[in-house]
Image 1 (cartoon, rainbow, N blue to C red):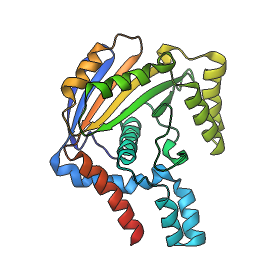
Image 2 (cartoon, rainbow, N blue to C red):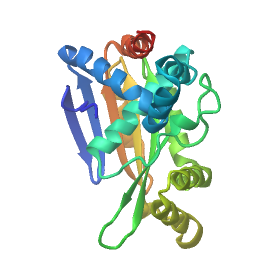
Image 3 (spheres, one colour):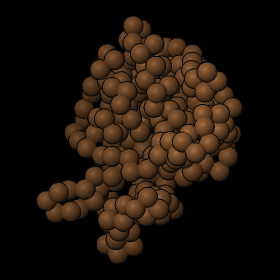
Image 4 (spheres, rainbow, N blue to C red):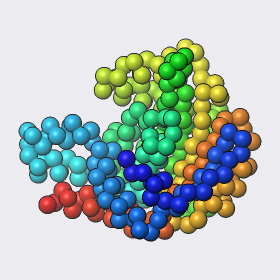
Length: 257
């Protein structure tokens, strides 16, 4: 876990059940965040058990090559992937939801972005066994602007604001492949039998930027008039590009040792 809120100055603003949060990384924590990202990034692209198997059977050079062909080379794709990784970690660490699969492991090509909902989190109520969904949109830009925020809003509002059928089917199939049939069955039952209501869904917009997200993102947050609960998190790292570059360089340097 990255513990970004522990490494940051945090400003909370609530409006009813909706929450806007500005999270600004402390300068002194930059190197720690890079180090931790280097440590967790490989697991977002390849299952650690798969890496361990390759390492045992074929040796370190083969395991290193296996990871290298998964890591994106294109600057824009790396930025987007880091945005999704930060979003996923934030969900797992700071909300009641968990992200059941690491979607980046199933990318069609390392230098292409994946289609569909960026990140889906789930929460299962232990008392009534009701399943709730967090539909998250991740945006990574050096400078935030209204067009980016409008695009995020449009994507969150697709499928009447619910997780897309394709995204839920994708998650259920991947869970079955990893033996997690109970959760897969709950997702399919909610989608195909019971139906999913607005009350079972929450939206999360997570931005990762160098610029101050407070004004524009808070403006977009306050303008939402729909019925689905909203969380909007702006994570500001002034060395936005350096964080991305240093993380991938650190991973690759470790593979070359």
